Length: 590
Image 1 (cartoon, rainbow, N blue to C red):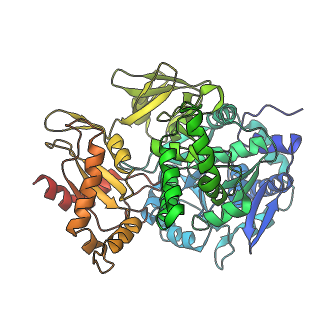
Image 2 (cartoon, rainbow, N blue to C red):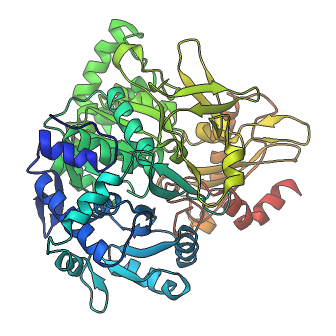
């Protein structure tokens, strides 16, 4: 009989006991998918645990882990760390060497593991300014401590009894991981999560996701250092799914067609990019094919769940699915049952279009501080409402404060912020986590997020502006890839916009606008500015006069993780964007 799952490594041991998989983890090596069974997974985890003990790792020691792509070594190391009572500190591969130095020092990490040569070089630069004893690499590189050397070090089972003893001593309330938030507003904060935090949230979320244990394939590609993908990996282990690691984001499309997964989690930016590519392809069609494509698209925009649009709409939709939307499903492998979107707000129009296309998108809500799940949409029992983040998960309590802030209570709420008792006390008050998000619960129990408390601002006229709502509406335009609403303390809200250059370039060429393939020249063209103004005018119709965008400026560069304008989960770093484009800010207001 299976033991109760109370600690994170129990998911794998339970699978070994009740439902062992031969193709548990699957990695693409030299063009071939190589499987790792449940038994091999745990055998290697115990080998690494034995090696870590021989290196002197003790319970509660912190170990930093960074990987460019998701891979089986990460999960093996995760189990190996956790079952000896140590703490896994995952880091983003895209942050700077100085960020590594700060987090490694702040977390008190004693060892650091990285996946490849590029990361070795980034961490090696600051290694001597930290307390880490050694740097290990999953890939075998000359002069660098290797994963293979650890497997050899732990080969002898002479200290397995010590591993078993330490494993038995790990309690559900013990610290399992410190996850550093991506820092949209400043210095990263170390969120402390226990085994219980993540385990209970995973088990609760499993009931809210409409899957049965069994022959299900999933593709893992979002950064595993983020709590969304981390939770997903534990959920897959609990369900006995076959996990395939995508080779890279660039090869995601190819991997989707190869693996034909039944489920993937998504972040809004990825879904937006998929949609933009689909529409770009549709724009290049001609004749009846082009007419059918855009007819289907308009039909999708009118989608309402539970057949609210009546039989005639769904008759037309069945035609659109057969002639147009079936190709969308094929591009995602053909087997997707549904997608779950988290991490940031998703445009409702995208939910409508993809769901109409037979690729349902269920928006959820969570935070690193809540391990992560708070609420989620679900087709069952009328639990799906577009424009909401679903109903609150069982065992989680949500209430709305007087100022509209969402407060959360439950076993999923973090232990606190590492080395920051004051911030912890200010964030968790009377057992309720203050999320920093503004929202409302409707009379059917659906939660709706309206904005970030810290991002809302007042104009000089005293009117409140909710940037996220305006930004979401503007990003529905194919001309706009990123937009940040500004105007705190000013007479009116305005926008700094990064155009969707892939689309705008093509549009400009079709219109005969000469810009010599220079984005600086492109954004200076009067016809381009006029066309963007038209998009803003259309969006302004949906808002009150005090909220409407009265001025805007365009940027010639693409906002990215690499240039520090987006976080690793593709959220805007508002402070950085404002600083970089201070000249545009002054141009608007002075």
